[in-house]
Length: 362
View 1: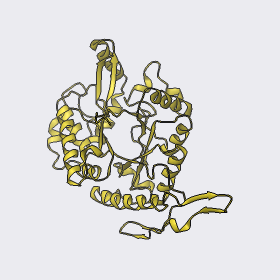
View 2: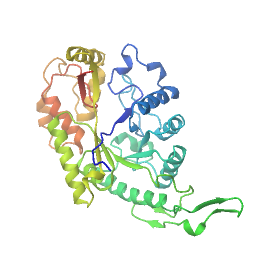
View 3: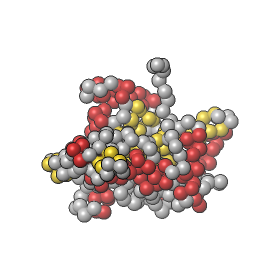
View 4: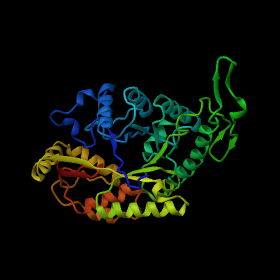
């Protein structure tokens, strides 16, 4: 058996594209963002070109900046079930929150997707960073960062036990004997914890994989530790090579600390490539996209990422870095730190957040 390492290719699908102005660019498929056949076609093309998985992000709240960008979200498990019907090999990764769902319901959804896809489901485990989500679930405020990860650990324990509540051979399905399932091989979990009380067992038989592939996308200290302990893949995005290398080394180190082999977790760095026949052509394409970004959208993004209202500053002037330096405490997570470090070295111009842009020759 070869020990040669394999490059994992994951297609991160977003309704309007990852660049904020992609939906406005000439030739875009902006008129098909509600058409499931569009996403089915993209998935089929990705599968044909040897991609390992497709990935849908999600969040249980509407983005504040939806006026200027296609920043709404489909419920990903439903969408991926439709994609499963027209593909046969590619992995199907859906994002779901441990803060704003219940383990039993989510266990059923992912078990169903894994059965429908014949063992291709993956779960991007998030705790939800958007504070406005709390008001959609009857909560007075968004739970603190550490509390969300505490709940996530208990959640993962519960949901994994639910998926394991049916033994591999519990489903008999024998019309001749009349035995459908061997009840001695179906077990209640009887969980009683700080956040959950769940009897079980699950009402769906064990799936082809047993459970979905565990993926994680948090880059905060808590998120890194959670990924190192549980994840099989982690999605991340960095603006510099040094930052990416530090992240990689830290995840591998923490993975060892949890008595796991570093090879058990794959790190998937995000890029948004701009491809041209020459470097000049690729740079020009990126500039054309950036010119389509609405300044109001950029300001809204910065306000969301940094917690700063910059509307009174000159958009063509240098970034007012003193405002960032004045922050005594930054929000938990890597998005704030990476965004602020870039902001300090840039002019306002056409600000674009999201995955790092890569202009390249192809």
